[in-house]
Image (tube, rainbow, N blue to C red; front, side, top):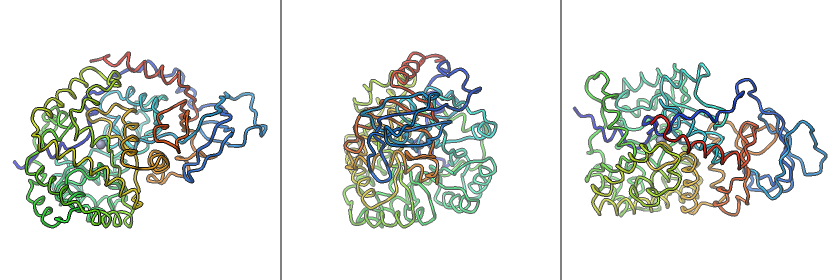
Length: 509
Ligand SMILES: [Zn+2]
């Protein structure tokens, strides 16, 4: 059987592990009877115009029923006796943050993860893993998403893997099936190049965006020309680095010799379920099982990196309108899989002990099983990935912020803020990071008319900050309040929600 579990398991998704517990009791009573927020006035606030990078000081904002109604200078006589009024002098208001690569929804109750996301100012997310069940629940309006949660912005069907796209024919059938089931897009991770391109053309034919990883053997240029809408995690695999190498031809020939990801030659009932616990483990950090042939190729790609070649790749991505979601924090938590900063992260207190334990186990394997050569290669790869992000950003490649929460050491909500820090380390300006976290996601989804900026008519999904986000990325962490769908959450209320998640972290485990 030529099925390679490790390749199928690359990156992603631990939602199935029961990462977070069921803790519903913070849900606000009456949210179903009274779904719309009332009037909210915020006075004295500096409005950040994310599109232009400009500040509008001393403004009064009126919101009603989840929309921004007006923004006028303070003292314009905007008084509404029936509105909740908040004094926000000295504060800055930005659009709510969007986590454009996240996996909070799965078989288990997502409330805790969603609450933590809201607490950290995330008002919308692109769910990167779907299922017939989740799509069905969405159709019926029964998704387990309470009011204290960000908005689900888009969701695919089941991710394309060798389990449902083992060959081109099956890949095409799966795309058609997901179109029927109401998927917003197709997400692919590890399939054969033939299945990848067959799925890509079919997605185009039926009008679904096609996004995901670049499996080994899939050339980034061909995927971009074929219309992949967003490349996640800088590709995963070697394709981007190989394309940026002076040894490109030779490296790609070697990559083509790596075992191809193919499904089992016949369907084995329940194989996916039988293997799921193994897969989950590997999803925490697939690099723990790196094979030496791949590491050797990675090393060569790093040693032969050419900025000129990478600029040429960037130009292609810009021309094709291909987006990148680097998820640097996901790459870093994998490539530094046993770093004390993650093992001792104080925010692990929000997670069930069993989840943290499973991450620790994988970390121990990282420490024990990987050679010093492999570890130093990963360190160098990460340093190069930071440079790539800088180069792509400077070249104008459209990019979005995403955390890949669901993977090991990624605490929901907090991990997107870690992503901001990594983007800052890559040398991106505060405004660029802010755009990646707000308006760019709206642009990617084609929804700038309703979200992603602080203007009348837009959704009342906002973050109020204690300090100017245009002077430092660090100021994105200083959350004073969050407005979600017109509902106001003071910092005390946000802290209360987080405490509740912590208190119930181990319920049901
Ligand atoms: Zn992911």
